[in-house]
Length: 139
Length: 139
Length: 139
Length: 139
Image 1: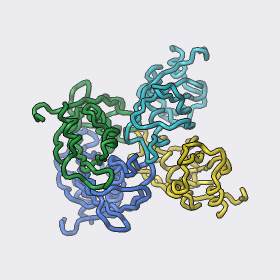
Image 2: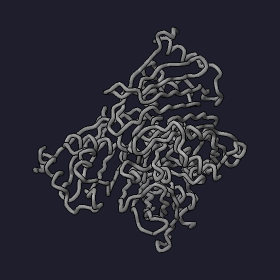
Image 3: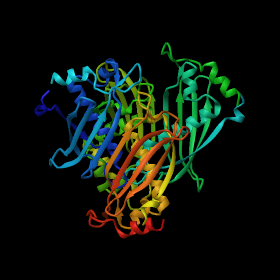
Image 4: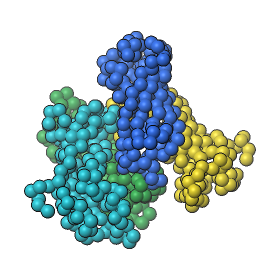
């Protein structure tokens, strides 16, 4: 797989009222939901979504999440989450950047890492299983 | 079981920052969480909590929830949820009243109804299974 | 305004992974979010959304919510929320029905009621302010 | 202030049913709530909680959050969040470790960083305002 042609997806999200806190901005913890919606679209795109993961006999729990908040998000704001593959050999690491859909301004940077866990033994895999590599390779 | 001696539990909850919306009050949808925490304490008390439900072979999905909002809840406010058994023969209906812990003012009234679903067949039970009646009767 | 031509909007929602509980179905409390997203689209349509409410000098807190759960919602399921005006003279009452977008099966029925509160005095209005009637009348 | 005597608080949290996902573990995004509850107790302890922040004329938005998930959290599990001051001169950085309350096993490591924003100008402060230093110093 050529790192020059990294898989990338884009997801639009409209900030709902119930995500906005008493400071008038999206509460920082809700971003994990935006990242997950974006991640699910990314995984749909590569043909290895949560259902496919389960069928392949692996769970992929999040083991690390980091979010850097650059500018606040507000009620009804439409944002674009750009999701990009960062690592895949030992874990699945995705990078995200959130932009304002209208102005293009960068609002947030984040990444998440997931590892494969064998569904039968419950043991963590030290290398990503072949199925992930195959699905990513098809892209 | 004598309706004069209805089972009742009390649960204290402190409104967290992330439940408060841009109007400065707890967002109305979060009350479902407060009711659930109170319901779990009630079910612990009668010896038929979510784990015991699962072991007994039944699931108890919520089929109806109604919440009447009397006064707003605010950040850091400590409230007392009083949970009371309302019906049990055909479904498990609980009534809740939320009070301010300091002033005793009534802030909210609610109820939830759950029915037993057979874990094997997935079919709804038209009468509450014997285990619920037993556990409630012991009280 | 003629009740025969009640205003109605439709909103599509895809159930996200983080709304699904350990029973494998959307947790009942999350429906309040689906109703709010649908309500915001309804209010956008009539030209009296949350921003317009604030500018008009009124807040419109939810005072009553009832949800009847007919069939469970599952991860990735696309549902259609049909929102309809039910009352407006003394309070704004909306009715919602949630359908499976593919099969058309009815999954949930709900309603919410909101009353106008004067932003300056903080007092509840016993009749809906003229601005709501006007906006609804234009429809 | 002597870094050898770093301020530390402990917060007990019981994982509620509505935080558990379809894998049977607390969904990773909910940890932001646990950290916030712990952070609020820490800030209460140092005498500079969210209300005091507002009165002092500063907002303290989260600009960075990182969570490392070591072991899953399960329904009804009681966990202890240990919160410790890490930096204060230019930003308020707190470190958190989550332990199982019964076994003492370490389940999660995290940190959050907040910066002061002037409530009037909306501008970020490049140094922490004097009030934070004073409150921390009293400890």
